[in-house]
Length: 250
Ligand SMILES: NC(=O)c1ccc[n+]([C@@H]2O[C@H](COP(=O)([O-])OP(=O)(O)OC[C@H]3O[C@@H](n4cnc5c(N)ncnc54)[C@H](OP(=O)(O)O)[C@@H]3O)[C@@H](O)[C@H]2O)c1
Image 1: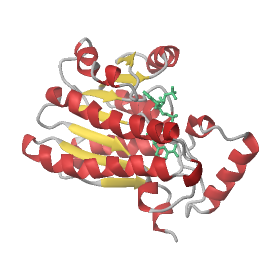
Image 2: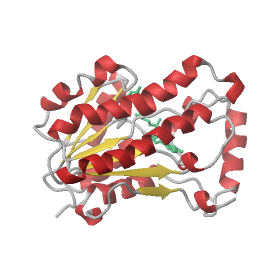
Image 3: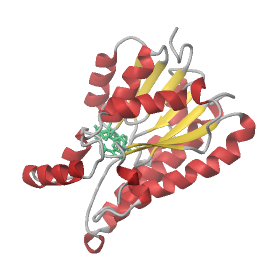
Image 4: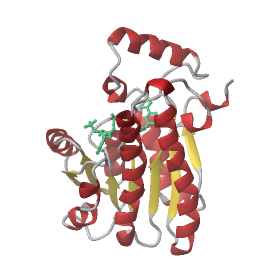
C-alpha cells in the first residue's frame, strides 16, 4: 500500500531535477502524476520515462496565458488535484548593480507570479485534505551575493506559504514549503556560468555544508512526500529545509 494511493499530484517543472525525482517517488507511492514544463520535447520524454500513471503538458510558468489555462489542461487529465507541488523555477543570478529588469522579471515572473497564480488557478479542484507544497530555498534566510532577485522571488513565495496556510486552514488544505540547500540538478548549468566558474562556485558551496556534499533531488523528493502524505497531517505553514545543515552555519 503506497502512501499516496488514489491521489492525484500535479508537479510543475516536473521534467527535470527535483520535480522529476518527486514525480518518480510519488508514482512509486501510488499517486497519479501530472507534470508540467516549458519544453514540449522535455515534457514528453519525462512522461515516457516516468511510465504508467504519468502524464503531462507544456505550460510556461512565466507566461500568464499558459498559467490561466492550467485548470482547463488539468481537467482534461483528472477531476481533482490532491497534491500540488509548485516546483517550476529558475535561478538567474547577477550582482545587484548588474541586475537588469529582464533578469529581475524572469526570476519574479516564473518563481513567484507563476507560482502564485498556479495555486490560484488550481485551488478550486483541490479537495479537503489536499496538500500544497511550495519549493523555495534556504537562501531566503541568509545573504548570498548575486542572488538579490532570485532570493527575493523565493522570499515572496515563503511569505505566501504562511498567508495561504491561514486562508485555507478551514478548508482543511495544508500549505507547506520545502527549502532546498544546494542540490545537484541541471539548474546550475542553466545559469550561464562557464564550467570553470561553476566548478569553483560548487567547491566553495560544498565546503560550507556541514554534511559536506551537495544534496540529491531524491533528498528533496522525500521531504515533499512527507508533506504530501497524511504523515504530515498536523503541519501547515511549515518549512522543511533540506540543506545538509547549511542554514544553521555562520
Ligand atoms: N538545485 C538547487 O540547488 C535548488 C536550491 C534551492 C531551490 N531550488 C528550487 O528547486 C526548484 C527545482 O529546481 P531544480 O534544481 O530541480 O532545477 P531544474 O532541474 O532546472 O528543474 C527546474 C524545472 O522547472 C522548469 N521550469 C523552469 N522555468 C519554467 C517555466 N517558465 N515554466 C515551466 N517550467 C519551468 C524546468 O524546465 P527546463 O528543463 O525547461 O529548464 C525544470 O523542469 C526550483 O524552483 C529551484 O528554484 C533548487
